[in-house]
Image (cartoon, rainbow, N blue to C red; front, side, top):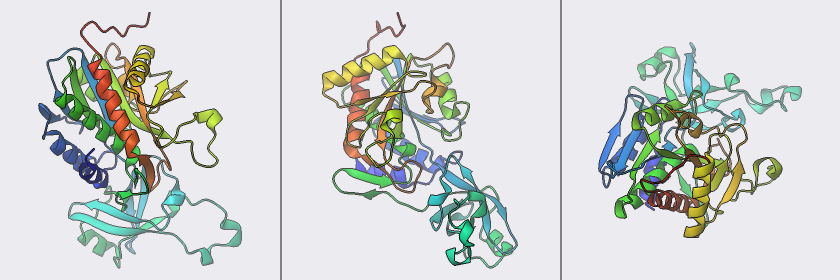
Length: 353
């Protein structure tokens, strides 16, 4: 797998609703091997191999990340923010941020009252995002405005991808730019060894705030796939104090996680298991009794319904500045998707019987 492409994709700032830059990186890479590459009005990017093939397979991974957005600039030049997606405000304290302004990227730091000035009975209370601010070093509001900053400007934590021991990597944008990476790598495998099916990789927009399905819903409506595979991340439970009884047993380096229940179609699930076993790909199983909380929820009821599978990558430290995954898991997941697509033909029927 091309780590240079992966680094460019993960490092490109693009919180939900502002995914233009990572989407451009994704499309530029797709153009090196795909038959066609396009972007729609909602910011979803699509790359295709064997467009006329049948059945039509959609492979979706969302390209957005969580971030912050400026809600107010006070007279002293401090920026107040709200969350784009779900944050644990504790990890924001003291972080550096990159603000995406009309004049280019501007760096700042997240501020909070110093511990010495906090009353003893308040010190044990959790920080809240609304009590934090961003300091860009400007002396007042006018100076901030002269820098090109405005209310509504998005920002991300200023953390680039790093390589850890073994095959582990860390990044602020693992969730879920890694899914967009995997579906494109699966499409690359299918370009090298085409299947009978038509394969469409989609880097979807606004999953982290897409409470009605985000970009996945509109892209699935347009593509009209016969089957869909969603790649996202799930909680790795190989760290201290994570309840395996509730989440299952999923290890970084243990292979992809296959979901069962709710939006995860039973026939698609069984075929994923069969393909993984045939290919010697390690995996674990995860129950999704009510919802998957992924793009699968937005895809599976599109039009008359889309049989949808969910394949997840175990991820440590979800929604933090340093999420951690295994490169081996990414490779296994891409191989599984490509092998699943190759297993299909025009007679494949996903109707539960």
